[in-house]
Image (cartoon, rainbow, N blue to C red; front, side, top):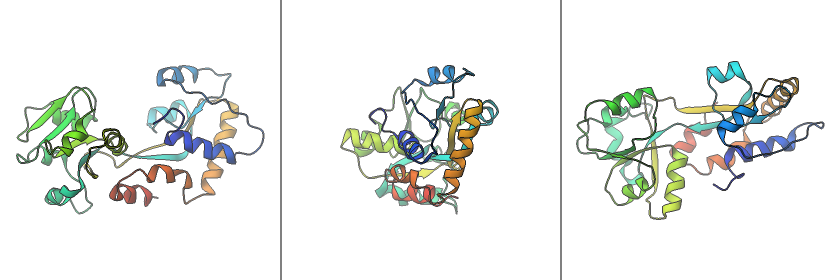
Amino acid sequence: MQSGKGFGDQAMAWLIERLPAGYSHDIRTLPLARLLKQMEDPLATICTSNLLRTPARETQFLISHDIMRMPALGLVVRSSDVTAFAPLRDSQGLIEFRRVLEQTQLDGVFNENRSYGPALDALLRAASPPAPVTRLPKTAGMVSMLAANRVDWVLLYPFEAIWLARQEQTAPVLATLPIAELPPFNDGGVTCNRTPMAARLIGDIDRILAAHPDEPWLKPMLEWLDPETRKRVSTRR
């Protein structure tokens, strides 16, 4: 996405329009490492909507109620092949990645240079699985491999898969199957360093969010998703 036009940017703009009078804003685009370094300054109030909620961050920072609800990493497949994966899904529609790696008839691909969380990393580091799995050094081109029927599944985040499909312009309609070994969502609120102004700001943000239970700030994000993932994200309360 163009800088300044991501989902987090749009959510922050929605909030800024609704904050009470008395705040001024200086919006900057920073690499994560630089942002976290600047948030160590006790004399400046610095906030972002692009950090996921973790126990460590809840101790270190002030965080509002959730404003972002990002679908977790999933098994991205061609929509036309969803029924082929039905026998592997449980009553909640989840699919065990361990079982996917046992399917010799299903080819998969993943980026060997990224982490997929402790559970999946352990499975991928184990001895060669029965399923034919391709390890690539980068993510680019994986969706095109789906389009060309070279693989049956790819490990990607839903937004990542959709972005690649749009960029490559040759991809089929995609679906993302939720993985049982992973949490379904990655949540995050507006995260600020601990200053008196931040404490007041987070309180004001929480009041705004509570006044809009229909979560209109999520609309641009939901429009990107495949129907199944959109329903799963939008109906969670």
